[in-house]
Image (cartoon, rainbow, N blue to C red):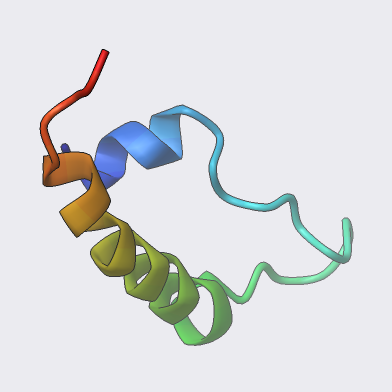
Length: 49
């Protein structure tokens, strides 16, 4: 599982202000990767059907 797959799937929120800068580096990037790292154990669990 790659973080790029989450980005490609549209997991990032839209810009809050259509005319202003998107604060990816200072606001969204840390939150995105914190959530990504928290979900990795669940993604590594074997599937149960």
